[in-house]
Amino acid sequence: MSSTSKKILIAYYSRKGQNYRGGSIVNLPIGNTEVVAKTIQELVGGELFEIKTIKQYPIDYSETTEVAKIELRTNARPELTDKVKYMDDYDVIYLGYPNWWNTFPMAVFTFLESYDFSGKTIIPFCTHEGSGLGNSERGIQRTCPKANVKKGIAIRGGNVNNAKDSIKSWLF
Image (tube, rainbow, N blue to C red; front, top):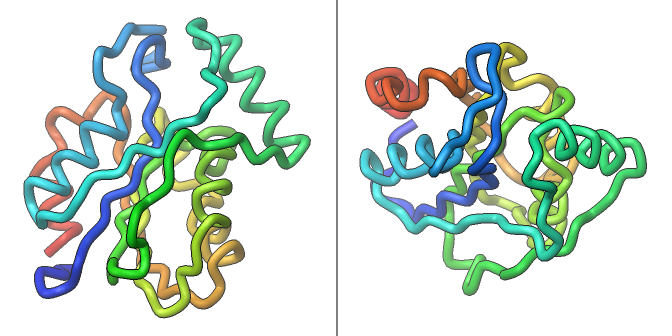
């Protein structure tokens, strides 16, 4: 999946703070998906863009999962804090997110619906605690039907700090 001659954007949604990891709630100073995004940047270059919502999720992990479940059920589109400048300049978008309820957070839908991805390559990566990519690849393809959506990688959140070799094998 090497894309060294193309202009690369690594867009990701990540949750730091309270997270479920290895059967326990832990406090993460950097979210799992952000760790993977930075590893991808180290390996292929590109620019990072963090997808952030204006309305913050609760600090408590369990409360956040309830909010996320309601957002999914109501097909919410949370407002984002920023937009990618010059999205038309990018050829390849690595798109990262945690798996929430078998798909990506609704903020990622907001992100995907904010741009025209026609002719662009989207390469998904997700973090999870046992559910893999879920239905997220299909969700990207449905939301961006004119994009070339490549096979993604799913990395268990508890393994992100030791996943560089797996990410490298997937990329190249």
